[in-house]
Image 1: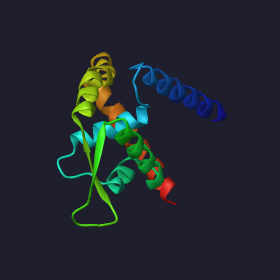
Image 2: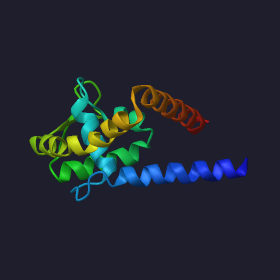
Image 3: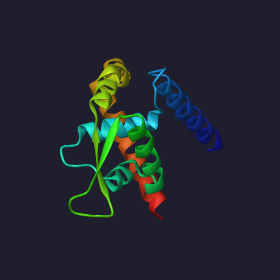
Length: 142
């Protein structure tokens, strides 16, 4: 059984490393890119708490990322009209351009996996990833 765990750890690590090299030379970290994509895709106004909940990371980490992205002019912050303690973040034109320029690279690898695995295996793969993520989220809450 230990061999199985070691093999799983190696395969997961390799998958993560290969995915990391999808787009090199970004002016921001991949975690910040994730925040930009998240903000861009939302229909409703985005708060730091929404980002924290979605990515399952601490609010101070989100604040640090938002401040960095604001300083680089990828996001803007305006006070929340409903909660004076919070603020709303929006993506700037510069942020929109960065997301657009990397969109194909970010999703090309997913499309490649779908094409090479076939729809049926790809669907199984996605369901297993979702299941694994759900388990890890539940453990993280404890």
